[in-house]
Length: 163
Image (cartoon, rainbow, N blue to C red):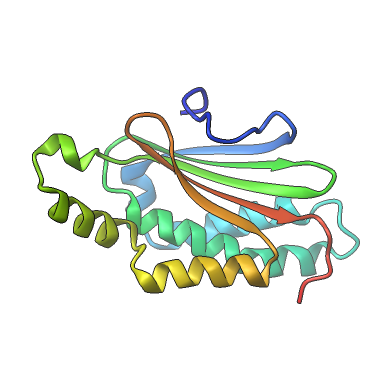
């Protein structure tokens, strides 16, 4: 999946950690969302004057994004969680396969309703992402990752002056 992702530039960021799991294993227990969040948030907190505060605060947003991925993954394969850091920001990227509904013969209206239901990006989901972006002063987006992939990308400021 790494080579297929071309919609953003990770080269300006230093890689911190990469975690890749089998989707079936990831989806086998909801608690994996919390465990992965805790692991990633602890790493994000490193290098800050108050690591516990920074990681606790960002764990809220990271957990929502990981849970969104949990609800959205429905294809066999791998899901990856990547953290990157620059002098001014931290990036969380979650990438996974998602079947192209058009190729399965679904009509456009069926495809749209399934995508909304499967990715949990109903109006409430879009509001949640917007609220998270505002609270954390983050840039959060969902992009295609190659022909049949989705990636959730969140850029969080390194500064610790949260609202």
